[in-house]
Image 1 (tube, rainbow, N blue to C red):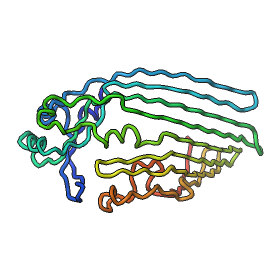
Image 2 (cartoon, rainbow, N blue to C red; image 1 turned 90 degrees about the vertical axis):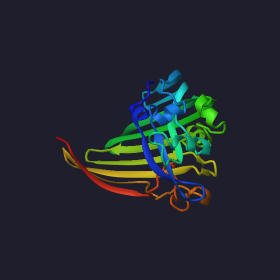
Image 3 (cartoon, one colour; image 1 turned 90 degrees about the horizontal axis):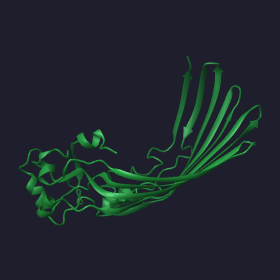
Image 4 (cartoon, one colour; image 1 turned 60 degrees about the vertical axis):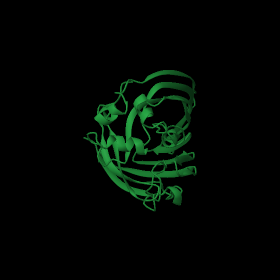
Length: 287
């Protein structure tokens, strides 16, 4: 896979927090910038991958079908955004380079790791006529695990400036391996009649981990319930009332050690979202 346009061309400068609550001027640099070149961060190469997959499927004459698929994906030279480098020797070195003045933390994209992803997906569907309409039940369970097989050595130029500087530290390892749920289970039951329709959906996500150099927290697994009721007013006009996360579930609050001094009560890695219940009324017209 060739590098994406955002990986090649995206750069930004913003403010983050230090471990003592101070403001840190950070910068994500492009690989063709003077800073990246001086640190030996070469232009990005394409990723290479090998994929293996196999599966079984079943279909009956009474409305039930199912499938199971397993897969394995090995990626070499995977492109990731590096950890922010705050090493004093590196920061002092870039101050005189174009775009380096005032920067206190530095990051860039790099072909930094080889990864291996293993997964299994099981799906089931059952449908039959019920109460003058069509009832359908869909369920999908997914297990995915990603591990880092190898971390590339730092470029010679960066290692010469600071042997302790790291492109792939605990934060990026966390992002790749444990910041997304290993298990997801989504089940949807729906009924479609001549005019009315109804839907109920449950969503399950297993626990996730947020890890910084200064703190680590595991967030609990989460369930959410979604409901929707629709009415066909005319052959072309429908209205629907629904709610996502009906039970108004919230993820665990971030611990004091990693909520950035009260600025982030909930961590955005939680897949259930941060806003609780969302109720909506919509209408659709087909032409």
